[in-house]
Image (tube, rainbow, N blue to C red; front, side):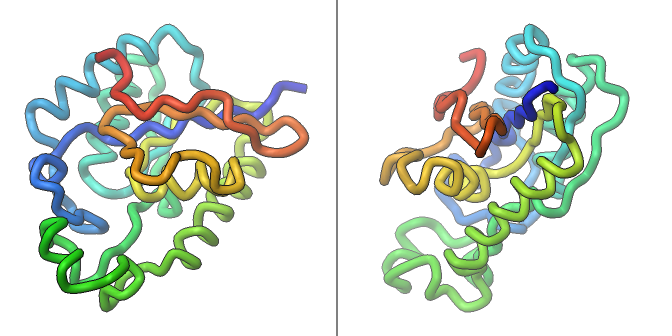
Length: 192
């Protein structure tokens, strides 16, 4: 039986990524550089065989997924709500300095998805993908915070290292063998 493999791909750059603003569920589009990042990454991804392309419902992820699917020859992009970015409540749109001066931790932002909640959702993502796509190779386009928590669940908190940023257009791969394992840790943009 084939192993289930999930490639978690972070969407291309947005203007809010440049500014270090909390995006969360705000539907901020990719900028021209982000589109270019994704196009370069698509060339590398086309060297791998992907059975499905899934995406968060947010526009920056959908656009990323559509560019990738087109290059990969995958006819349908499947929207998966579980891949949505972590909600940051009233913090969405705030610069790093703004929210970090006002709140000691992201969990303290009113309306934000707590660390416990995003960790539980990361576990649900893995369980869902294992059940729905057993034995398949899936490219899942998502967001920095969610991918970070998925990787933490898989590696028992070892990856990513504290302070390590998952850059836009990066690809990290997990595989289900007896349990989920990290196959590829690559926080830098693919193809750059």
